[in-house]
Length: 508
Image (cartoon, rainbow, N blue to C red; front, side, top):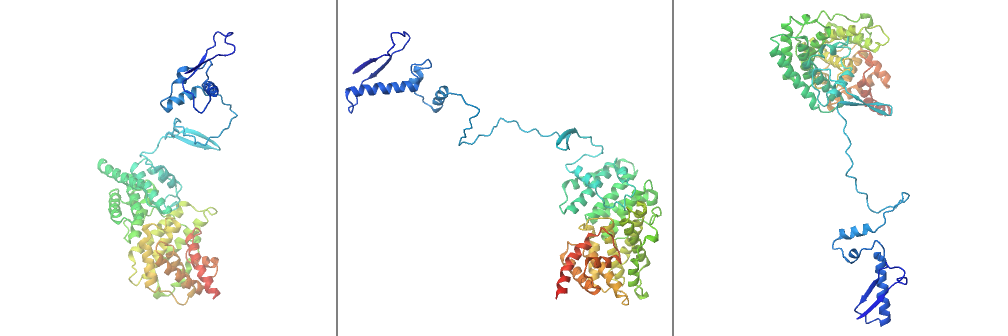
């Protein structure tokens, strides 16, 4: 065994200096004795430098102890690793930064607070309390906003603007009104009816039954209004059984109040009840329940009526082809209504005059619609009546064209025009072709049935050739000779389908 003592050069000057003993018991055979000694000293010194031997931080136990686990060695390495790091260092690592799971979740807004955007600033304000006597469903606010922006029946039902004030305090009437607004919104968007629409209708039915049971036979104006609105909603959805039950109930309630003329607290209530009667009658071809009201007698003056209604009279000048005078009166009144609506901003027309004129025109047409039949000799009157009602509903009342309530009228008009020869006076071919062109244009507004619409388009092409109509302006002028309103988008779409065929035929 070889033992060697090594000490530093200044051991005598520094009494605190520790001596390091290097002991070796085995000399490698490949090394000589002197080389083995130098090798042992250098390797031991290297280990001492790495471990920090001879310094104040040196710990013999940590040096000699061998970590048994990876985490123990990590602790030792962290202890003797410098923790200085400059802010200017941007040393990128190949590792992805782990997500900070200690971050707080984003606070959800309190539903009682509203975010009001003012430019780039968002201010949180306390939402106002619900002033209506109903509980809001998730989409109730959207449906109410849609109703207040809706122009459907603006002239016809609510000329004085007091309809919402009448029903805003009654929960049943409000639920019924919101269900109608939701139905119209679904039709305009071309989507399925939302669940909240059915929930509002169910709430209206429940509250109506509760009021009938609790009021001891007292029939309030708002209760009658709620039932009338439900009839309109069910006609819009083409629910015949439900509409029949509620229409009969509405008629009994009005009779118990002394008749429709006695329900006169507000004229808007009479208009809504009459509209429910019209809706049920025209949707299924049934007779009217209520007589004509004398209170809605404000009519537009005859001087406003367009001379275009004379086209209809010219086509039926012969006594053998005579039509009911009521039909001519209805067309004259519709011409006056469309003229007043088109010039409402510049003319001196009262909204109540327009509303009452719509009531009288549709009352006459609804009576004719339930009396004439497409299978009899008066199929010409039936076609004109159905087309006039469709024109009033689509262009004056602004109802959605895809509403199921129009199916009966569209089907009647299509079957008459395809299966019958209209009795027109052959002496005035231009008036005859203009009337036929207008009838087929109204029928082509229904785009849900491709085959009937294609037949209408084909007939319109033939009539355009006969009348030498090559431009849209000429096509519009021919329609104005019968019945026209400026907000008539269906005519433009019909012409787009017809004009291409006309251009191809002209080139040939």
